[in-house]
Image (cartoon, rainbow, N blue to C red; front, side):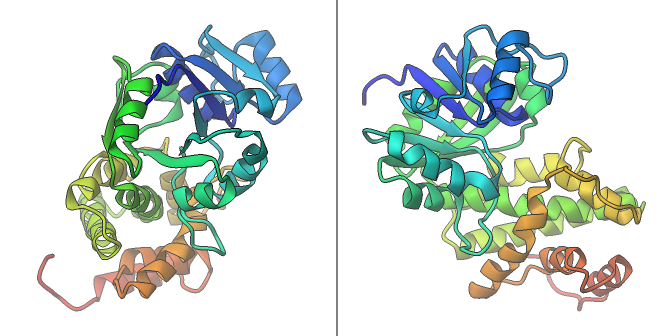
Length: 326
């Protein structure tokens, strides 16, 4: 495989900007693409992203509003939200003149199609070689260069290993795997379960309840993963259990914050994207198709859809029949 010397990041939000710094620290030539020409111009002038106040964009990161220029990189990271991934890759596709890795950096399942992130990439761009990056991380921490470990998955192990070498540094440690579906299920399911954890915290049900919810939530995630062919070590690793623990305990997680607001009876903050809210109904449909029971995720989906109150959902979970632990 030829050396992967250049990286483009599509999506100049907080996560995309943080990932551009990751690639720059790894010694790559980096291009950050912003769809808004105003945003691109402002970031060029100030070397700062309004969504990451006080954090300087690495000097080696070039910023552009020209998608064709970004598409010339050896590796492309797509840092848009999950529900916008298809649009971003479709726009990118005409500019990919030869096969190259395109890495999804969002966690979710597409509404309507029930497609995972790598499936969307494969469908939307003939020359894209799909991969996915997931794991316990927040944009602020990554942008500041704080120690972070994640998982990077591609079907081809040689490619997965090469991508890890291209992006890894002293403070950003990716582990590679070929278990693409395991990484995708872990990332998608934990967002839904983080909302449930936030509801428990918002209702002030105590640390014991939060620990129990997180543990039982992981059991659900693992059941679905096994049914879809995921490997146990992936589900219990960074992109599964590790990411679940982080997002079920930190207000930095938008999904956890959404759950806290719901648990307190507050209206969620407008304009704050929580991927779990989009993923919940799709996740339980996928689980049903596999014959997998996911009571916590089902309760979250029902609460979000207004089909049940939080108190009724909690009562329903607490009065389920006793059973052996799985």
